[in-house]
Amino acid sequence: MTIAPNRLTDPAVRVFVTAVNAHDQQAFYEALTPDATMSDDGSDRDLRQWAEREIFSANGHMDIESQEADGRALVVNYRNDTWGEMRTAWRFMVEGGKVSRFETGQA
Image 1: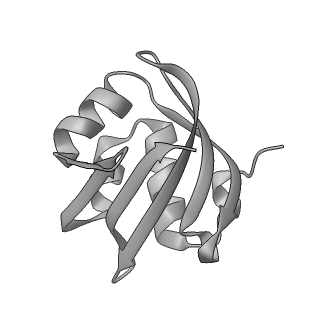
Image 2: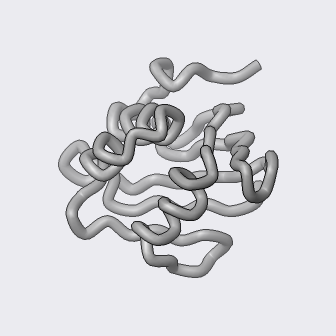
C-alpha cells in the first residue's frame, strides 16, 4: 500500500513529490530554495542536470512506501523510463518551507 502524496506529513516534501509526479518543472523548482543541492547514491550532483535526466525527460514517478522523521525521510518505489523501477530512500532538508537539499539512493 502506498501513501498518497497529499498525505505526506511535511508540506515542502508534499509539494516536491507532487511536482515530480506531475512532471511540473516550474512547481518542482519553486519547491526548492534557490541554492538547493542534492546527492544520488552518496555523490553530489548538479541538481538541474540530474532532475532533467532522472525526472523530466524520463517520466520519473514516486510511489511512497513509507515516511519517517516527520515526513522528511521517505522510502519510495521510484520509476522512470531509463532505469525502470527501484526501491529508493529519500531524505530532505527543509528551510523556510522549501527543500534546501535532498539525498536519494537505493533503499
